[in-house]
Amino acid sequence: RQTHRHLMLPTKYGVPIVSSLALLLLASLVTGLITYKKFWRGFLRAPRKGDTRRLTGDLHRLAGVWSLWFVVLMIVTGLWYLVESLGGEAPRLPEPAQVTAVETIDGAALDRAVAAARAAYPGLDVREVRLPLKPGDAVEVVGQADAVLVRDRANAVAVDPASAMVVLVSRGENLGVHQRISE
Image (cartoon, rainbow, N blue to C red; front, side, top):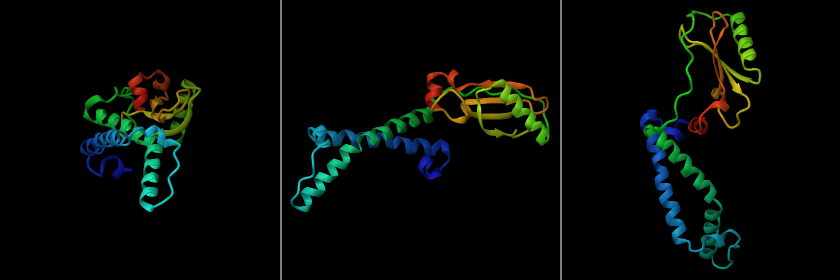
């Protein structure tokens, strides 16, 4: 994944490099469509028999025409990530406020936090419980709910680990269009 996404470079350099290749892919798509006159006829054209050169050329064109949708998908997602990496990212998801700092969380406190999250967001199918990274961070309970095609983090409940009070409920269906596409 790291190689595919950003060539194992730091993300701020690798993602723009990889996603800028969408421009090269777009140029390749346009020139391919220009050089293959009446390409739409190629969808149902059977490869001609005969010499090997003609057969392989026809098979190449047939594979190219039928893979157009995938190439367009790669171009669109590459351009999306290029724009995001150059500063056009969606607004960040809401962050929970600072909570009571605790050094450790025992099983009972974790159970109370999950129960509070389930009570605050009854439709949430819990997929992950994220423990605080440092004192003063909330326990985050994330998962899936009514919003379709979003990451688990779009539906989240942040809970104060000391008091089990809910400090933030984030629902995927309440996201803006840009945030929704990004998630």
